[in-house]
Length: 69
Image (cartoon, rainbow, N blue to C red; front, side, top):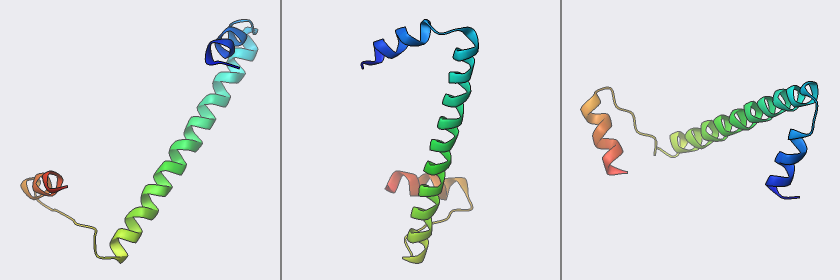
């Protein structure tokens, strides 16, 4: 089933069904973002343990760290 088939199928649904799909999509997107945050957190923990994580307390320092990446 292609994306356009899905869009057309959604158009044919009732308003209540479309609202249910909207709620489901919002939940799925929230879960995906949560997973992404957790993965980034875990990666940062590994970097910290390996001494690779760098911190900056001044804006100029932070800009330099970003440019060095």
